[in-house]
Image (cartoon, rainbow, N blue to C red; front, side):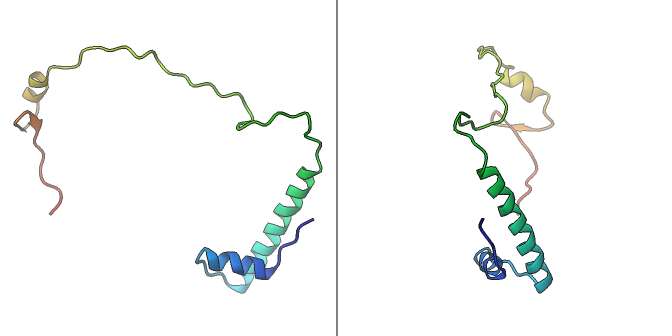
Length: 96
């Protein structure tokens, strides 16, 4: 069983550029130790006959058929625009 110490938590916090007070370090040490204990229990399971998977449930992409179709006429669309210039929508400047 792997153990985690306060120094381990502080080291990881330093690597992640996080600052924790003493209470938080104690809390994370306890929580991470419990997580490692749980992983240890999972490692005890016999998974020799279990095929590796990337998801617990079967995944199937649902896509519609790729069918080419005509789009709207540019002039008709631009006729409905409040402002257009050189074949494009004209919008107010938002960056100064």
